[in-house]
Length: 152
Image (cartoon, rainbow, N blue to C red; front, side, top):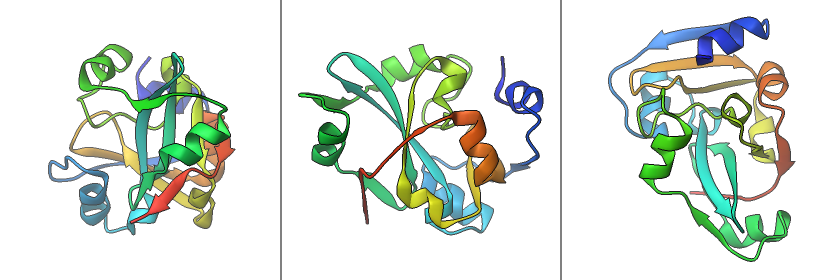
């Protein structure tokens, strides 16, 4: 199922936009004319053999020690690009949407994303973005909420 099909099936009101090719979430923010804190960046991690999709603002980084403590894991590391291709076969590498549920992954959302009513994220390609309400994002992603980011 594609991202758009999933959002449509879930009855989400969203805006799909096209922008110049963007390889970072901060570039997406610039092209979409929104603050970096409003762009959701997905980061895939492996924690003691369990894969998680972490959703955090583009303007932040994961604090691995804090994440490890929150999910009670001994070892947490970033997933490499080859594994990204396996988990997200319909997406360009680096343009994955931050909705793990669509791909059979649990989503962990950093609480700092609650600052805004709307969120924007890449739609599976480096030149398309989705904007939706935070309420709809939480409904479709069904994330666990945590505090694991450090703002840049």
